[in-house]
Length: 321
Length: 131
Image (cartoon, rainbow over all chains, first blue to last red):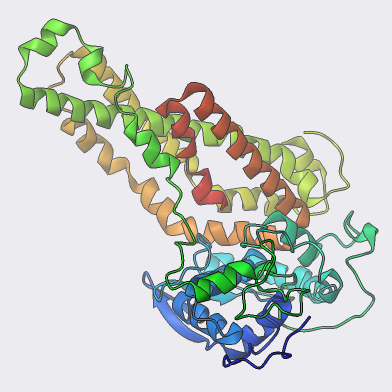
């Protein structure tokens, strides 16, 4: 821990950038919330992706937007905020809107949900307040995986930062380590906790934000390099989606019209007609694929849910469906 | 379905309601598309060189209203799903296992068969509903 020992021309970060809880707090204090529209719906108290990355970059005093984005994703991995549409992670884009997780977060005000919301408020709110107590206890556990890229996410965070619905103690609280006895009631959802290892200080006193560490395993090295090396390497590589990968395999026998009819018929039609037949064939087999996919969803995914859901909602009900 | 009715910790309406809110009218969509698929299959089997499919589509399109309903409800379903996930650790863990198994099986099938059929499973739309 050698922060502040060196006098550097750089401004130092506002908070220790490796601690997610600190960054989260600074972020929440600085980000401007407003009401914004997207796809014809107005969302209350939201901020956009570009602004979020701006603020994080400002908080940790970096010019590397990619790094700020990674840190932001580490925050959203713990559900600190989420896209208003719930369908993507933080993106450095002014058109994507995000909102903080709150105790009762409802972007909807439709009549058909009202009744349901009422019961949720009644049952969940006090429990969520209780839930906010076991925040700090989990600091420095869990999240410090070497990648720390925000992929160490999902289920894990959900398990330990949320509240329990059942009034009886859940299997989680039996471990005792993730709960404290303090009874703090706040309206805000708990802050994320964890260590973003890319931004941790090094144990070596000669290692600073601007001087490359002697150790090639130094967690700071990546960030140091990204600033000292003129052009940072492309950090996030886009994965080729399997969906389009599948579309390339169009020459597979059996899916083409030309392979499904006798050769003399193929010979008897014009080139243009062949193309037309392939197009028609594609309409038909994609419809077949779609129905098969939906049947898969129904039989493999939805039906088991009917069996499992009672036990999930009541973990102590061990009857099998 | 039985334990769903037997357990009284959470009202039955809420449980069935949850599934309905998340998946909405997917059964109607399956029904519409099954009819369309059968008509297209029949046409393809009847003719080696298919004259047209536009008439079949024109017949089917008046019955496409379930798509409109599904589309306009999608965000509500997503909201219900996220709400349950963030307030119910058991459900959150279940979803995680579910997703891993889905990834595993689709990966497995893709590797094994190397066909667009296996890749098609990835397209199911489970991602859209459960990510």
